[in-house]
Image (cartoon, rainbow, N blue to C red; front, top):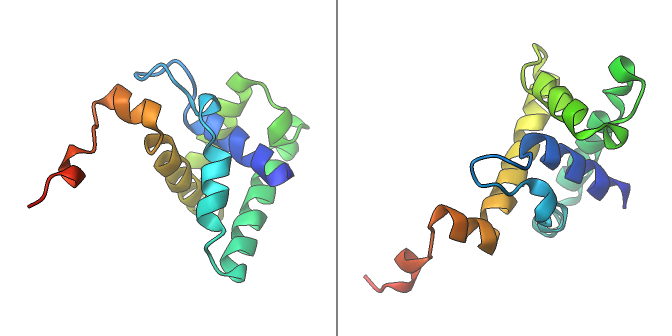
Length: 127
């Protein structure tokens, strides 16, 4: 599905490789996790998220003459950053939701949990 490719591109722009954790969004199945999470939403909300993804796919075309999924990593990071700094809430708001979903899936990955020192012990102990 092309929406998964769009989501992977957005996630890669939001969480690029080489940061403090050395891992980026490309190394984790963020699209699969988000798809699984969003599949529990009602039809209207799922359609809204699909519309947001397509909005972000075509929006860069007006500036770079290329859709989001065909941009290089450096161009992708710049475009996503420009979305975050946009003066239009209709661009910033949907990106904030997608950013929330992407970071939720990123930090839920076992490899990332281990890298940040999270071991789930607080859930294993009985209070």
